[in-house]
Structures are given as structure tokens and as C-alpha cells.
Image: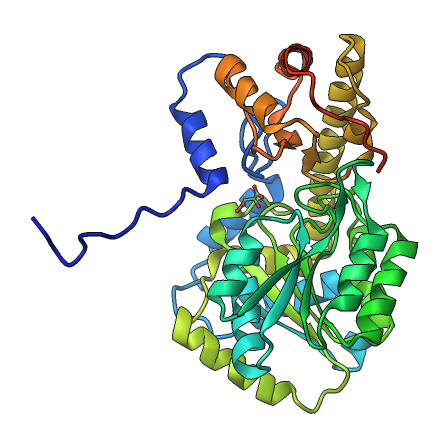
Length: 414
Ligand code: LMR
């Protein structure tokens, strides 16, 4: 029977979620999930941060809490605290009133609102994202109204490091007002960030060519364990007086994945347009989802604004980032021990949740088919999926796979 819906084409699967489902459906006992970017404990379990649990309990017991609508731009206490966490409590741009934040539906929602704002209000039509990048950047920005999606060089396949010259060349060729999506730290998927000197060169070109930087900040504190260190690039741009937007996610660093907690930070040269900007953001959000949810934002606001809870949370991000570092060392060590062909230094040199292993698509497929080890076809692995119980299994599987399909170049130098 033909209906109105007859003939709708099947859309392609979203790789990371399709793999996640394939993993869940797999009945093999020793299966390993290195796909979706979510933290796991050494027991392979999700971790509700103890400070989050504590605040949730106190909120549940607080009769003054209710389920009234939040304002369209969200919970101010949250946005202010999140903006201050990003830029630093003593940031001159905050003191001068040139920075403000508004709540969003995690990092993705922040990106979408930013894209709508750029395309509808500023009439920007071209954006650049790194090659490779988080696969959703392109979809969010094109759905958000951008006509021209372009990649800038980021990764050098040969050296397995950042191709800075290539990146700067592409940025120099970008048209004025092109929006440049930058990963503020823990680049997803490569785990390779520019050095401070490289960031300076990137900022020089952005300023000189009048491009508009958008920082995607999904891992502040989670990457190095240090909130200030992970905010280096963003703060340096602010100090230089460059206008930008930063989209913050609290999925990873607070473990609040499904609560969709995000913030969009505007850093402006002048305060005089803030009211107008906020009025336009209000219309954009009202037309999309009207107003954001309360629960996660209230947890984050409570933690960031209370010195004791804040210290507790900082301990948690150190716990998570050091477990990842341990897994890097553990995997590196085992790969060398079993004599895996290639160089594996990149495993310990990269930063953040992911490692860009250099494994080829064929090897990735074999690891999945033969060993039930799941990772993205780009060879990206979520380091948090590793633990003391599966490190040997994974290292042996990688070693055997590379020996069977010896085409990979694992000579990363980042
Ligand atoms: C990832 O990169 O795996 C995560 O950020 C989850 C996602 O939405 O892609």
C-alpha cells in the first residue's frame, strides 16, 4: 500500500550510535566497547560522580525545588558559573562585562544555536571544520543554515601529527567571516592539540584574515585534570581581544551525558550589543525548544558555586583523567611487550578521551569481527573503554591483527 511516507529513503546510520548498539547486542563474553565517548570505571561501568549524587540527593530533598519553566536563555546562575569556569574567575573580559553565557542543550545544542545565530543574524554562510573532526560538526552547521561546509587541514597522515602549515594555509585561504570551528582541547578524534606557539600562529591568521573562531569545549578539566590548562587556547584568544563564541559541554567532565547540560559563551569586543544579541538568541531558542531543562544545569551550578563541592569535583576530574593516562601507559606498554609492529608512542602522547590509533579500516573490521572489539572505522578508540581486565586482550588482538594485515603506519610523533 502506498502512503504519504512511501518512498522515503533510508538515512545512513550514525556510526557511533550504530556501533554502540551493535556492541550491546553482541553476546560474546569478552567483547570490548571502545566506541562512544563516555567514561567508564576500571570495572567497565558508567560513573555517576559522587559529588553529582550528593547534590542530586539534596535537590530531591529540597521542598523549595519545583518544575517551573526556566527562562528561555536558561539558568543564569549556571551560565555565569560556567562562563567563569571557562574564562577564569579573574578574567578581564568578565570584569569588563564583555562576556556572557546562555544555557543550551549540551555542546551539540550550543553548536546548533550558534550556527543559527551566525547564519540568520550575522548572515555568515561558510564554516570550516578540521579534517578529521567530530563527525557531527558538519551536520549541525549545515542543518543550522550554513551553505558552505569546508575542511581545513589538521592531520598529517604521514607523521601522524598536526599539519600546522597545511592548517594555516587553509585558514589564510578562507573568506572573511568564515566561521572556524576549533577544538579548545583534547581534539576529537586525534587527541592532538596545538602547542601554545601553534595556537599563537592560528590566532594570528584568524585575526589577520578576519575569520570568526568558534571553540568547541567538550573536555575542560577532563583532558589534563586541570581546568586552567585545558582552557589555555580560549583564554589566550580572549586576552588578545579576539571576538569568539565557545560552546561548552558538561557531558564528560560532570558525567552528565543524558542531562544535556551546555553553555554558549560569547566574548565580545564591546558591551553595547549584548541586549540585542540576547534578544535574537531568545527568538532562536524559543523557535526551537522554547527553554532548556533544569536538572543538570542546577547540579553544575550548585557544584561550581560552592567552594567545597567544587574542590570535590576537581578531584573527580583528576581521577578520570589519570585513569585515562594509566590506560594509555598500559596499552602502550603491552603493545611493545608483545612486539606489535610499528611505533606506538602516540598512544601516550595524545591527550583526552580518545586515541587515534592509526589502525586501518580493514584492521578495525577484523578486530570487531574476530575479537568483538568495537571502535570507529577511523581507528579512534575511547581510552575509557580499556581497563585492567581487558588491556591484555586488546593489546594482543591489535598485535595479531596488524601482523595479519600489516598495512598500518603507526609512526605518530605528536
Ligand atoms: C563521541 O565523540 O563519541 C561523543 O562525543 C558522543 C557523540 O555524540 O558523538
